[in-house]
Amino acid sequence: MTRRTATTITVATLAVFAVLGLTACDPGMPKPTGSSTPSSTAASTLTASATDRPKPPQADAPKDRDAAVAAANKTYVAYLEAQIPFKKDISLGAQYLSGYVLQGSPAWTVLTDTAEKSPTSPIKDGAFGWTLNGAMSYASSSTNGANGQKIENGAVHLFGCRDNTNVTFANTDVPKGSFPVGAVLVFVPDAHAWMVQEDKSLTASDGEIPQC
Image (cartoon, rainbow, N blue to C red; front, side, top):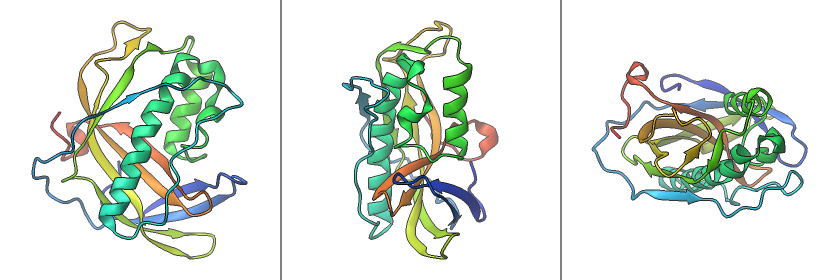
């Protein structure tokens, strides 16, 4: 998870999946105060279909940092919900979540690896919980490498705790509990939506992380 200097990120629009280069400019991570939002549970009610792919919530260009973090967090919760049908039936393929995940991004690589390399579907049932750490999460500007357009607060770095207590895994040895996670979402103007660029578990080696 990059938190220091400018980071090059790749975006694919929903309409034509044209790859654009974006640069997220990080102002540096704020010190946490220990405050966090109430936990939300991404309980899936979706009926999975390879041709009926879930779509992220529609969003306007962020007007300020608070609005950007709130909108990106809403999309991330919806993304956790959309993951359940996919991980219950990986034959749906990575394209099932193409509305949420930027093609060519680190998150897309993880998604395709799951679809292509998992011998069985990793989840049987359940729902992920998510508690945002609002003190650590922040927004920074992004720049469209194709046309130079700057998007104020167009990249959001979310930090929080993802809870898998209510998820039934095919592998019963998967540790259960609430674990620190960092995610990067970027605003895609053509899609009028936030999309996931990176989504990873955090450890002490990542520096300052949420206490879960």
